[in-house]
Length: 149
Image (cartoon, rainbow, N blue to C red; front, side, top):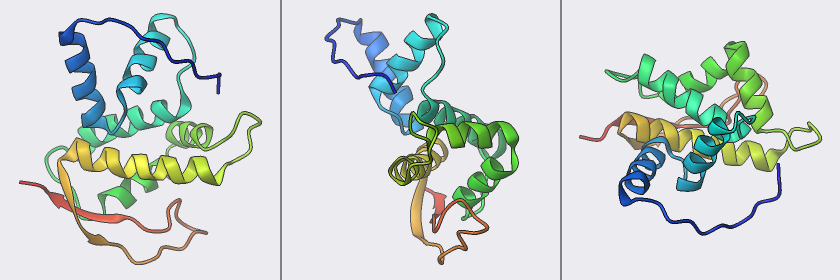
């Protein structure tokens, strides 16, 4: 990943509000949304972490918007594992600049995917799953969810 630099910029309130709302709804940060927008404008390669989170959000909106099982987070990780494009994006997001998988990047990404699932679906946590077999699943455990009415 490139060196991070802090810049102060002035933006219209309408753009800030829209970017912040989108970020919150996806479990991202304001900086993630701005980085994605600027990277797209300049036709740059996307941040791998943001890229997979946006793909997960798309998947959720397409497949689970109307209803979802309590183990929807597990279902999302299973879709990531079984879809070549999603799996490539996932592996890029959990790999350091040398291409080595990082447990820290993986743990952070897993938390962010869980947050993305909850926020996109408007869900609340009602429990935790039993421990999963790490030789079969990408995750060790996951939240059980239901609509937060």
